[in-house]
Amino acid sequence: MVARDPEVRDAAVDALASDASVSVVAPSGEGGEAVRDGVESGADCLVCGTAAGGYDAVRAVDGTVPAVVLDPEGERLDESTLDRVLDDPAAAYVGADAHAERLLSARVGEFVERERDEVGWLLADRSGAAVVSFDLDSYAVREVNDTFLEHWALSTADLETATLADLRETDLTHEHRGQGRGEPGESDLEWIDGDDTDPVETLVAGALAGDFERREWHCAGTDGAFKSEVEVVTDRSTGVGYLLASVPDRTGTDTDHDDGAMLRSVMEHVPMSVYFEDRRGRHVRVSEDLVEPFIEGTDGKIMHTPEDVLGKTYFDLYTVDMAERATADNEHIMETGEPLRGEEKHVQPPHGRDLWFSTNKAPWYDDAGRLQGIVGITVDITDRKRRERELDRQNERLEEFAGILSHDLRNPLNVAEGRLDLYRQTGEESELDVVAEMHDRMGAIVADVLDYAREGSRVEETEWFDGAAVAARAWGSVDTGAATLEQAWTYAIEADPDRLARLFENCFRNAREHGGDAATVRVGTLADEPGFYVEDDGPGIRIDDPETVFDRGVTSADEGTGFGLAIVREIAEAHGWEVAVTESDEGGARFEFRGVPRGGEV
Image (tube, rainbow, N blue to C red; front, side):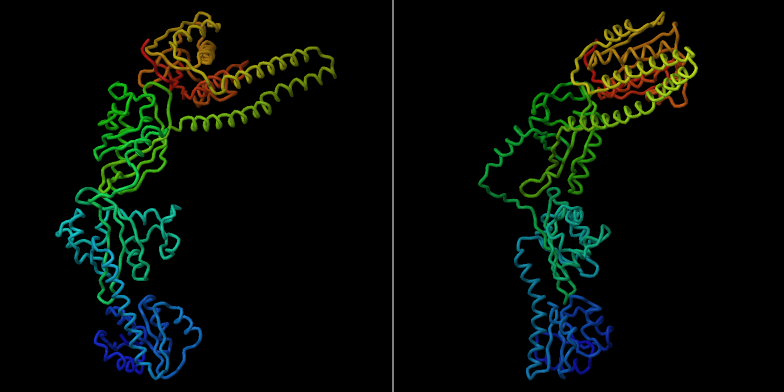
């Protein structure tokens, strides 16, 4: 293809006319128009002259098309342009020389054959792969080989309107690029800019630029989903591209390692839950750690061994909410091929303390690359989460103690100092009575702070018991007057009995102070989820925001220090429970404690 300068065009036509393998087309346009005409016609190589920036005009239209700069009159290029031509792997310079015509023919032939040879050799190297020819402009599928039809879940009718984008479910390489995952070649692909780039467009653009990138696709196959490594080569002269794709190996491969023994070691000895689920969500193999110490199914059946879990789905093992979330995760992974990484879940078993887990899942493929289901690894991170929560609580309590020193103790101390100064000035003994009263108040605050710190520290040892006995003991330790205690416990709970008794005592005092001698206090287990309640028939919570009753310093009693219910919350949180205040059926206060491990019936 000759572009731009008439003299150059004539010289090139003369030089190339004798080469039967090269078709010479001389466009009628001028400048950039001639170059565009050449590129759009599928030229293998452009020939331009040195005048008026011929090389720059070519590169302004197409940065990769092969170009030969011909200088038959010896009008040497300026040094800057010559340097760019010589550094350009898709360009060559032919100057004034007795053999200029032969050199030009040779350079053009090299470029033409190079592009044709690349396509031919790459296709030859990938014999046995699936091959798809497509239009370089629209990406529309033109033809496919038998290997493609054998493995892809697409019929010839589907392919009539298909483009490259329809041949895969997900371009995994494109999806993961830019996420710090170190994908092969990622750092070299500067031409990919942002998440909005089209994965097909960038793949083809790379091939046109000579960057034969290999990507991993997740594809729908005749035997289920599979992974395929794909790359594109292009034949610019015909406007056709070729997609070369690997296919599952159905013959299997030999190995020097005992894969079965390695898998058994993982399943039996690695301290984490490893499991394989088929495409219907049934567990087909699980590790020993999955059932350590046991799993209680939704039907109440206890599963102690991996064999007990085989064939079970999430709906057989866990609550409906958990099962629905986990099943949705599996379906997304199998549809897209994208793994699930480090998802943290909080679980409250029907019997026992709440738990935290971190889960990783990925598609499970067989040796032939066919999708079989899901492989997952779940790690118990309960201890780590509890340590994190305890550290957060300790930091909050340190701030609380700083507030106590700066406010709660400073106020009575300032009053005592002021009254002592007045006594020194006036000799009025009544001032000393106020000083003594402030000292008593500071003593009460110090005692409450010690209880606050002691009761709020992390619970290390617990035991199972009937809460009724602990509540009765606490009731006897409090001046309840003529108030009445009623209990309704249906199951045992797990807690520190001494801390729980302290919690009950503070709740009972609160009910007595606000409900009077005739108050009725009820204690029992919750019906909807594991936990217990303490309620009364008094006047209820008489502050604007009931939830603030657990804040330190909040009290409606003139002599109160505001630590009673704050200590209740500290004891609950030290156990890992949640406490909330609401209204009882009689209009009084009701405190509910949730997340309490539930035991057998009592």
